[in-house]
Image (cartoon, rainbow, N blue to C red):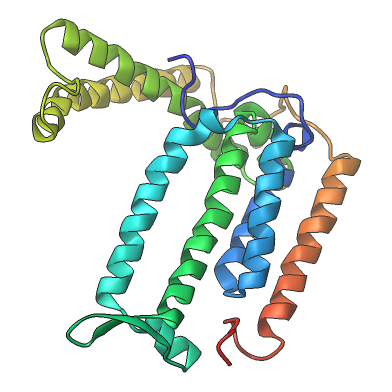
Length: 276
């Protein structure tokens, strides 16, 4: 697979040069800010900053487009289910009712509900791209070293690094097994109907599961034979110290985090209400 999804993409950029620990702390505070606030102004500002981060990282949209489109599908499905099961949640939150048009029965589209669901989707658009950017710009080995540096046990840090490295391996195995099954006559192309293709995919998933389990056993045995975990500490080849750009990033995300908390809660309400 030439361009495996959600794997490290090496580029020369400001974001790539940040340590893994810096990017992790940034992502945690960024996600917390987006989850806590319902202030549309803050979310829009963060969304625009997220787009800017993508530009700075030099990651091409096509390199992560499949994942983003896949997530977008579930976001739309989630929006539909939210409206079906709670069509007046926005009315309850904002305390007003502006009916745009009637659907059927006692169900109507309200401006409050649309604004509420717009904010929910804006949260996703704010967090998910930055999360993907965090994965594709962070070298797994350097990330593990950074985690250990900030106090995470090196066994946990190493497990995270292996998990990140394992993503492209699983994708490569899936493609190899798919090609092998198709060479044996298994139809997985668009010529076959969707349900039949889903059923045929089981013939790929089972070998993939067994090959994954076999790889886990091989890696576990290799680590055990090398005495992994016998010491209380270890050294790291890819360890890096914090530099000025890391401290600048800490200052920026700290100001954003505490500033957003102040703006969100200064009036005692998490929700920005344009209807009053």
